[in-house]
Image (tube, rainbow, N blue to C red; front, side, top):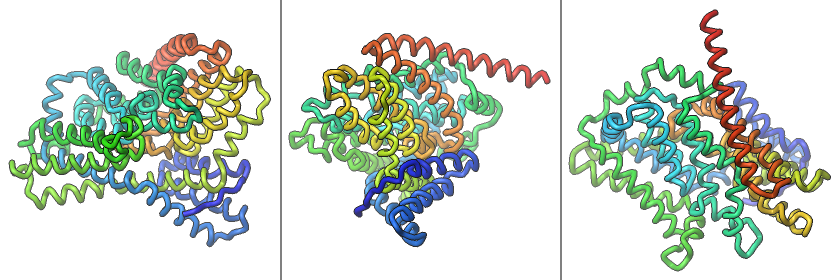
Length: 504
């Protein structure tokens, strides 16, 4: 379906702003997103000579277009959630929780295990979120780690890891955007300058090691210490005949077949390089892997009579049914992103600041990071953000005067894009992380936002340093010291406030 973009100036930032503000105020995501979408369509319709009726029609045109564009993602999520339900119904999740509970005996170990698993599954961020959540949720529930904390760890080791992993769909997407003969080499060069990804990973492990939470996350952790997990109550009714292999084998088959599926769809077995193959159509390959996981579960469960054939099918249907609420959020988010990018020119308006500013070129990485962060947070997409900014950056730096700033500026664009993807309420990764952790979406956003924003502020300082030094290393040392100090200070302030409140 063809859409014609028009320039609407500052009005283009209103739809994502309306959606985000409403979601944070009302704690209700569905209507907030829809109002954001419809407000964007009203702006487009009125600015192009249309009417309210045409705005309504365009809303559903865009929605149907986004469903079609992301059909493989929908199929993958449905099949993956079916696998999640199957391993839970078989007793595999319960057995794994019992087995791991004897080995992972404290919150620190569970947090580290979750973080490491998130880093290991670096092929795709959405796949990462749901798989890590499925495997680790029984353990973190048992050890009273809040669902909000689990969602944060999952989210913080998804996009930030994928954006610096040389073998991932993200690497291929970035390399393809760079207008050079060796785009992949350019991508590798940006990794030390991707301060947000590196500092986010550092923050996750620092908090896991020290246990120093602050803000809404600390409140969530305190609640989790006192409450009996809902998941643990459900565990009492599961099949106690399941074994650890009933969870591990289907998930392992899913992961291996997903990687092979991405390689197959992309033409790896026909001579295409592996990195290019997995980036061609990753969700199609992931769908093949999820289907293989269902087949594995069927072969593993039915002969042992862990469930009857009718129960097996009902479990698949129930699993697909459970993904409908988060899927609706995803569809509305995709639609809002489509309105912003394809109709009212939100990205064009914001990125215009890059080319119109008269500030010193040494401030370019800092400025690009801020603009990329705003764009990505507003639109809920990192790929769309760096897709628009990279061509502009290469044009700006295509001079002798600014040539040395190309790599730092590209790194800043990727880092800012990941920040928005990491914490925006309308980002698909944020939605999938809350889904994987079985955490209320708005609670995940509220608890994660202070953490992500703290990292972003520290990184902004780093890009000021990098712009003047043209080196990432001094900036990284300064950022590490600043971030660790800020976490300790904020945690201490929270403890003092809690003690005063308790005494009064």
